[in-house]
Figure 1 (cartoon, rainbow, N blue to C red):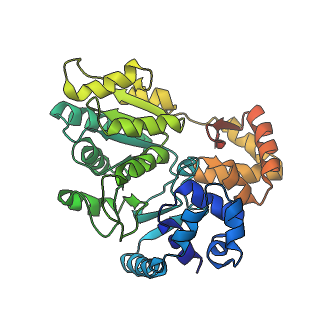
Figure 2: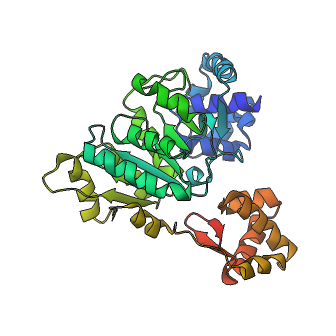
Length: 364
């Protein structure tokens, strides 16, 4: 029943993710939103809620659509991930406007230690494709998850290059998983589901309209440590993804081009306005993101053996996941957030862990 209500919440007409999360917080649970007899009083106290939400909740077709979605995901073995689930991507969760529910078709770790989004023009040049393939090949020893949007041009080039280098890759699509756009990329999409997958916040019955793309772009930006733009015209859609990544305080990088090249103008402007770091090779990305390979000194490993039990609990969780948000550490260990925060601060001072943006921690 919980999943049924989660899907219903994601389908409420005109109710965005921020309002939906407020509803859960103020009502106490997803089920209460649909079952509480005093819902009108609760809604009056819920920020950004009101008549629009009541109207959506009273939609007589809502649970018919939910039942159809449940049948669809069961038949296709698609995994729905709610924003309160442990499996919900940590990086994506940090965005206030992150979707409350995403659907995954495939097998992939959405909390992989290293994730890079690569976007660019649909009308990529041979030079742009070559740069894309070269950078991904050079990054292969790090084993990053490559995220893009399955579109023509740089997107599909990034997915193919990742597969060629045996790297996991995820395509974030702007439609439900009952279809595939563009259809020409179906064979690549099928290959991706074995080592990666397709991800969307749209149910199968959702209309495929241009307005879906900004929503798709925020997932592309939010999933990754950084976004790399390879070829973009002055008003290219990739620049929207770059702006969203910047708003999430994520690293943005761009490959420069000649001043006379139409599909380098967007990248050049990002660099010129200090909205993106200049990248000409994988070495630049490694330097910006600290992806250089480092052997952990044996002495450091031995130090961890002597940690207090509660600190060791935190280390074990971080070691398992590569990176972990403080809320996830609290949930996994059963510690109050305040205690986990205090211990992590001590461990940071002693050099055991280091903090990353968004209250995320990794081992030193």
